[in-house]
Amino acid sequence: MSEQLAPLDIETLYRHHHGWLVGMLRRKLGNRENAADLAQDTFARLLTTTAAVQPREPRAYLCTVASRLAAQYFRRQALERAYLDALAQQPEAHAPSTETRALILEALEAISRVLDALPQRTRAIFLMAQLDGLTYPGIAAELNVTVNVVQKAMIKAFQHCYQAVYQ
Image (cartoon, rainbow, N blue to C red):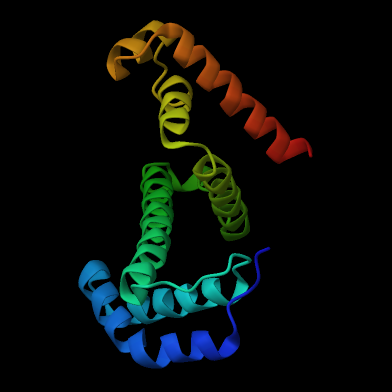
């Protein structure tokens, strides 16, 4: 049966490793403010975890959790930059309002979260088909898999997206 990490355990982890974690994230992110935010998010994630966590190597465990959060941060930043770049290329008369921009960014982040829940290969296949416009045989050749694997991955991706929207 799984249980949450006791607050004292997280407090101990925090006291012993928070400074180290911020430093590691600062080197990865290049700025102390974002590093501090992600370090806090890492410990917040530990507070809400339902798995019993008693790592033998606390720094390795914290590094894994923080690295995953940093990857999400980088994906979100790339998504926002791509959207803002596309927006900057539009004529001013066609540019959406600030409210519409916020709604679009929120929708893009929701889509990103749904796609992030897919296995990596399934997500890659889905994006190659939907964004790059590749055919199933083209994707199969690119990834060195069979067309049947591509078809099954697409079915899985569409089912996942459908469930995320309608259930």
